[in-house]
Length: 489
Image (cartoon, rainbow, N blue to C red; front, side, top):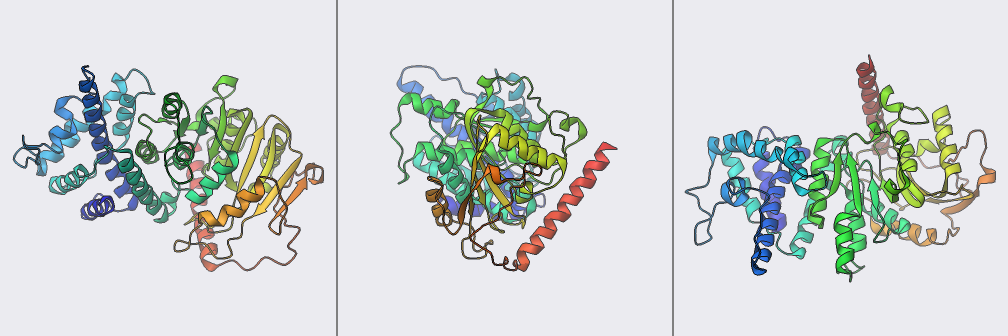
């Protein structure tokens, strides 16, 4: 039922001139989903309060509540078509009154960790792209048919929402900014093995895939059943475990909605340019035990942002890596996706950053991912696994070879990463894994290139699709560089 409802909503959005991409579809579905979820949550809390003989103070006032404007009901509980706004009246209300009221929550909220603040942030960033009030009325009725009343329903909805995010990622490079393949995320989490009580952070959270999968890892057992957690542990998961930052407006909104559907009522996601923050005065108590991230690569940050970092570079991913090292607690664990060229680039910034990583952290594992891992991007990537506080002595490499070309119709799956996770637990050697002593690493270049000693044959020719994707990615990076240069002039 849920899946068909989402298809129906997409069909409605397809007719809207203002919605032309999967990104638009996900954005518009998100704000309606959010308000329906919030109404269901408030109704549930009001009922619980009533059973206890206590009053409940609604977050959204009666005039702007979902059940008032989006889905009014008759006394019999049926949809009230006579009192439901539609056409131009509905568009005028949503654009002129509803969004203004909701945006105002940011100023009225007691703090950034409240759901009221999140409401204000979301509706200060997102815009209604419906131009037809009749189309919007159809979409609202489809959304109203969804239910968030049980954990099972939320779980099913979260899976469908994840599919929408995945489709958005498959639609092109822009969508791909927000989507990291979930099998890769799950493997990274298994290796890092976060525990309840530890704080998990992603400073470039995109659609919050790392945080959502971490929640599932801690909340459910291997069979998908709820783990036996105490009330205190459940509260810790809700309020003191998952932290993220995101610069882009659409990604921020999607991250909030994604976490809510996974079970986090008031996600600790901040809408901010992470790299613009100064970390010099960071105290140990403010650092994180676990960091999981896939920071954007190819972007270029301005000179004033680069001044926040010891190693000056315009490469966004390299600045994020410095940020993560600094924000990791002593003894903390991290897994970070980065372009494989980081391992061998000969420029001074790359060499200095590799040296910093090796000397301040134990870079114990490098996972070499095949081309096509990230759909729509032919650029090769690696995952760096490291612990803060002790220098690197040995690096265990694993070359991931699924035995097939990866693509939209044949993506990475969990089975592809099973051997990696198993061998990594003991740093075992195999045809695809080996260990390099830090004493064998050149102390001038700190070159960490992936060189499998078990394979001496030349690498096979890459698929044309991978080459074309890489060319497109390089073209996009060139555009970003030129825009960055123009921005500094």
